[in-house]
Length: 452
Image 1 (tube, rainbow, N blue to C red):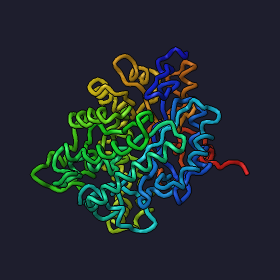
Image 2: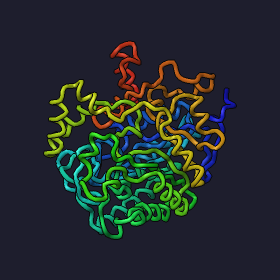
Image 3: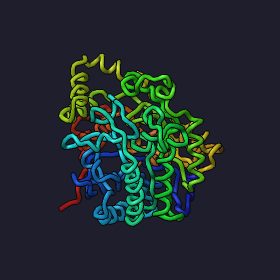
Image 4: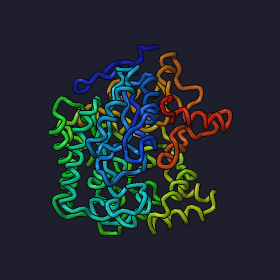
């Protein structure tokens, strides 16, 4: 049944995608400790290409040589990373040359997850403050003008390296609570200078970054932005109360940017010659709007325990989660976490209609009819997913044979999400397998090097 709209090609800035399904950005410890990609990284990515999807959007490649988080995630912060990336992108596409590879770049800022030792640069952000949920540093610290200009240069240089690597396109992440998002979000950005103090000034960092990147890669290179349609600073509720100081402008802290403000930012992206928008919602990673499903308490406990040596906040956070009775922690930390299919679809349709750029939507897609509805008339241009494809890398073949959903669908348990910084990447929902051994074999299959 290849007459489905899912299998209709689409072209964006001279890049033709053979169908409408993309593997969205998902990270895992598949690179070397210095950030160079490996054959393990290549083999993980190649399974998706071999499954027939139109393209792969990489995990976030770091643009700052000092903020590398989590460990064993890839970097593009130096020219020495280019030969490895070029070699392995070609191998990912060897058997499926029509599968496009898009490299996502970003800087975590204060949301840096891990480090070998506490580092001052891992606390850098748009402004100073405290956040219990994200990052390991006790407090975030405001960047100087010089540091901001250097960060803009980091993105531009990284973009040039991405093009040199042979990737088909580039995506800048302005979501996940990473540095650009920290400048956009009024609950985080409390500056009163050219980089903050008004919506227009909060946009300045992203604007400068896009301009610098476009100058480096040229007008003919595919450039997209992963953008949060609304921040939902209050979600998850129990964590947001520790994130923002109490001020008279409480609404900005509580809500962050709403969809109206983000639409204005998106329209300015069109003026900056961005080629597409990749629409999600929420602030920070993980959050209920980006990875709908339950909060993975057990897996986050593993992560918190692995970072407790990095500071008072990290130790206190770990101690609290280990002290709370498990049933109570699961009840408390699951406020606001829901399994809602296509959670960002309404936002994405609004962006498509009002901005006019091609739109990719992400968040809780797996069923064929739901995807067809998302990209039908007056809908989005493409759908991206990660968890569903980890569970079933041959999902497109199921759709071709008329299945609406795989025999063993992803349950959106978010265990894979909770383990991205600590464990090999794969499906950790044991209920989907006949035994734990079968589950472990699947995880190792995702993480194999080339044969000797």
